[in-house]
Length: 116
Length: 111
Image (cartoon, rainbow over all chains, first blue to last red; front, side, top):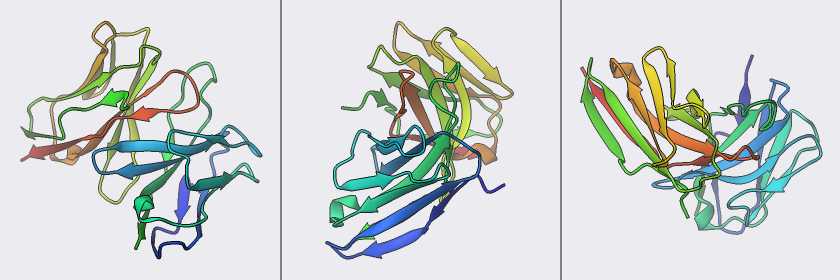
C-alpha cells in the first residue's frame, strides 16, 4: 500500500520553463491537495480538489494550474517557472472535510523544486 | 496573514522530560485542530487532533489541550524520547476544504 506518491522527488528548472508534478493516491480518497513549504511559512495551500473533475484555488494559487482527470491523480503544473516558486511541494489526500467530522490528510514525501 | 502561529521555531528537551509545543490562532471559525510531525526528507504525518467541542484529547504519550477563549492549543509529549525529534506543525480548519498550518517548531530531544 503506497499511500500518496509524488513524482519527481527533485527537479531543477530554468526560469520560464514549464513542468508538471504528479501525485497519485491509492486510498480512494475524494479530496486531494497541493501545498508548498517555505522556510518560516509553514505549509500553504496552492490548489485542492474535492473530487474527480473538480479543482479550486487555495491560499497561493498564482502561477500554478491543476487537473484531476482521474480520482487517484492530481497534477500540479507550472507554466512559466519563476525563482519565487523554488520550494518543497507536498501533495496530500483525505476522505473529505465534511464526512461527519474532519478527517486528517495523508501526505506524500515531497518534491524539492529549484528554479534558477 | 498567518492565521495559525507557532512562535517558537525550536525547542530542546532532555529525554524523559515533558515537551510542550504551543500554537495560537486568530480565526474564531476554526473548529478542528491537528498536529503533524515531520522528519527530514519525508512528508508530514498526522499525530493527533482535537475538535472545538473538547478541551483535551489524549493518545498515548501525546496530549493536545485546547483553550478556545485564548485561541491557544498545546501539544504535550510525556515522556519525550529521542525519536520524537522532528518538526511539529500545528494546523487548523473551519470545517471547509483546507487546513491552515503554522510555521512549525523543531523539537530536539537529547539523550
